[in-house]
Image (cartoon, rainbow, N blue to C red; front, side, top):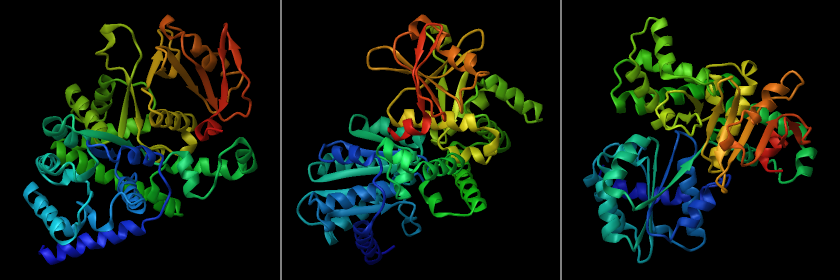
Length: 440
């Protein structure tokens, strides 16, 4: 690509960013608050969750508040087919030098490199301009693969960056996108029918923002399937040089269909062998780690104070998005699993570290999270608390490892009854799950 075409591309994106409009993501204030500090800002997350839009929104606001002028914005989407030849740090530097010569003016410059992992050895270029021009530039990066990013960050950029993880839309953001404001209990009650209809759709199809513009359900599933194909082929098979793609796909299918269920690597290996697929335990472990590194799955460990259990392979896996589960299990099959998945993602958005707890009798607490007082908050999730389920759902709070007695208890369900329950001397507050998600 010649300099004239590249210059046109630089100016084109300066205009696009200034016209950008949309919902303010919950991560946006945190990213804006970090602007002005010297470290590089990097936004990571699953494909199509809105990273590009977020950083463009931030850039627009920095132009609007006078932090930078439009001519001092360089935005490069490195998945743009017109930039396919920008694959080395040398070529990236040529674009940067061109920007400085044809557009930039005196003052702070904002440099945004979207999907930076598509440039080999990108960290060398970033470190060079960071060290050389750091006082004059603000750098924001985005990326969709933790392995590719972490290996380079660890070698050349450690201690020079702030990382922000972007999740798919929360239910609050989903309602904002659909122009439904629910900021109080009165708002929730006033719009209850519409809110609950939206929640059912959110549980079924998830929070990837482009999906909100698709009205046909089959088309929505086709869109989700296309994203997963891209993740499996590009972010896993090609990057990690996977040779047993059949095993990889079967492992992923199993983990998605059984999201939130306790599993072990040994059981995954047995399932594969039962299907006639050659599998080794170490291969299954590696494949699971690839899905985590591609941000498609989260791995949750069992809570234990026993050091011998640190290496236990008992764990749970959760999807990055409830909609992806629908490709592997119909909505009617697993409402409780969807609700648990939804709570897990919300706890992660709130900065919690999630574990689960079980005892030898098989009782299970869905989530255990460290609190600020060195105790542990406990969460149990169910669609409805019925007399038949009380022993299982409430009894889990008394399972009780003595180390878990501190901290808060919370039972989340779709019930309207929010009266605190007592079970074997343990007080268990209850919340309507949707109201808890919305903070009302």
